[in-house]
Amino acid sequence: MNWKTLLSELSERMTLQEIADGCGLASKGHVHDLKTGRQKTVAFEAGQSIVALHKKMMRRKHKGDKT
Image (tube, rainbow, N blue to C red; front, side, top):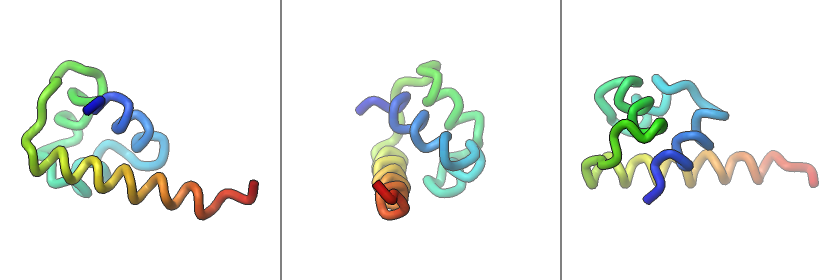
């Protein structure tokens, strides 16, 4: 899984703290480290939460599109 891409796309719509809270991660620093590639692995449950949040937020974008 490419955490950098998922978290970069999420951070365009949410703050790092909102992402951390939404995924059950310890802190926005943890999100930042994943986003920048400083940390490359994540616990299975946290990874599932990131993917689910990404899917939810990307759906919102498409629903709001007029084109």
